[in-house]
Image 1 (cartoon, protein in one colour):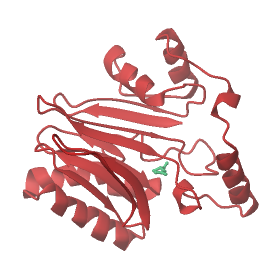
Image 2 (cartoon, rainbow, N blue to C red; image 1 turned 135 degrees about the vertical axis):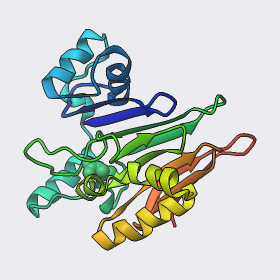
Image 3 (cartoon, protein in one colour; image 1 turned 120 degrees about the vertical axis):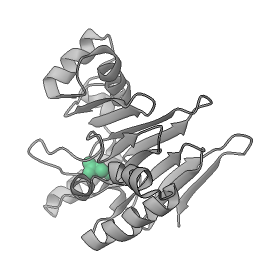
Image 4 (cartoon, rainbow, N blue to C red; image 1 turned 90 degrees about the vertical axis):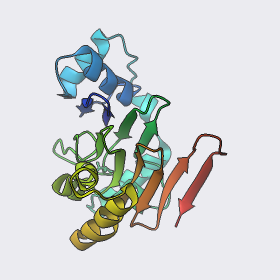
Length: 226
Ligand code: ASP
């Protein structure tokens, strides 16, 4: 599992990668942010830190899901590395972005990564600026999609930079990156983002992206497809 969290008022961040027993990876990422001198921790070291922080750890069986196991078996047979959401059921990476009543933005992402990933592969989710980013001056972003492209395009930071340096709105920045740049690279995916006015943008170039949003004084909404 991999996870990241970032707070926009102080540009603090914590991320973990290659962990397998931590019940709540974003909570571990938050502990890395608040209770260590580091930003990123991996594997056994990250698990040792989790246990020293008193976070709940679980045996492998706790994480077993028949659906995801079957998906992995199919990918294994085809010798493919796939996006979990390119299969029939779309449960996988989870992201959250928020603006609080003090005007502070934050983003978090949690993932099991690509189905049938190998060799200690690390995706975009735990890489600050690629799959996760927050900055009170611009926006908070959490991405989902084929991580190798999101890593190379530094998607989350790119959106923030387009707002900061080019003066684009969040919608314009998301359109430029998700609907143009990523499409030209051949990358499937999307992101959820919110700007400092609380305007949410949920942008994707895939068929669907499970998403929900709520604004002050409004009923919560959810959507799956375009
Ligand atoms: N972005 C994730 C990764 O490449 C996968 C996903 O979003 O489903 O690890």
